[in-house]
Amino acid sequence: MKSAIIVFPGSNREGDMVRALTSAGSDAQKVWHAETELPKGTDLVVLPGGFSYGDYLRCGAIAGRATVMDAVRAHAARGGLVLGVCNGFQILCEAGLLPGILMRNANLKFICHRQFLRVERSDTAFTRAYAKGQAIDVCVAHGEGNYTADEETLKRLEGEGLVAFRYSDAQGHTTPDANRNGSMNAIAGIYSTKLNVLGMMPHPENLIEDLVGGTDGRGLFESLVSSFPKAA
Amino acid sequence: MKARVTVTLKNGVLDPQGKAIEGALKSLGVEGIDGVRQGKVFDIELGTADKAQAEAQLKAACEKLLANTVIENYRVELT
Image (cartoon, rainbow over all chains, first blue to last red; front, side, top):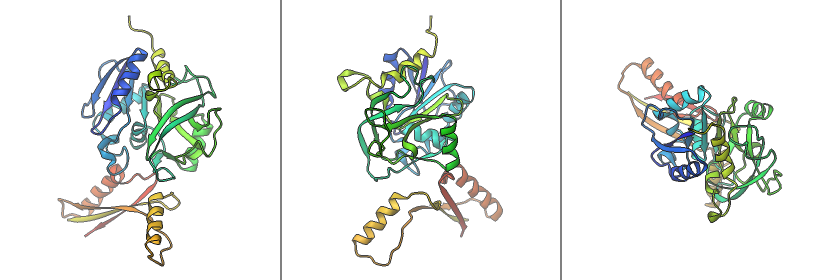
């Protein structure tokens, strides 16, 4: 499985993303934002976390309109997989690939801590290694993660089962305490209508080795890699 | 030709930054302030002298980048 990790000026989690994908068995390479095409045979595009363009204007606003994003849009339109984590989620929203927007955290603070997420469905290319309803232990690190959308969009996301993860406690219950950034419906991640684009604020790529405190993030990368037949 | 574009949050959209500024003004003892909403101002220089063309260019700039119309309104003034 070939993955392309897009690097914008100010991205800073691309190295962790390459490591997470490589250790799951993907051929992962970085792609500069000024490219007009994705590498041939790209199966998965990843927009990593960071502070693209210094979060100028709005988080993800300028990166969302970068040259390479036309190729990413075309890849998504073909049904290709796209994963955006943290700033990558913000970029997907600004690029129009996912609905809604990530606003300033309701408590106005940058939050950085371990966080449980409830896996809302386990039948997608991103989550098949998990069980539906499972609480996974990952972490969050963001100042603008407060998922906001209009009522109609929210209704559609819920109705069509497009919520991927919700902030929860260790038992998988959504509680006000668990939803520290104030996201609507405790949304931590959402899918596109065709389930091929996933944007999420938390960092699964942080928790892939016991050495750094946990491995619950691995499932996401293993799911992605197992969605493709192994190269001969 | 010069223009000023003002981008503000739509009514009803939570503005925690505006709230924080409001709180700071209160703690400074500035009285009589009932609410603060924060926005952005862009001063833009345009090459054209044609008003209609300028308005079309500014509308494109706002729709494509300057405002996220999910949560923001914009206002264009030619000066």
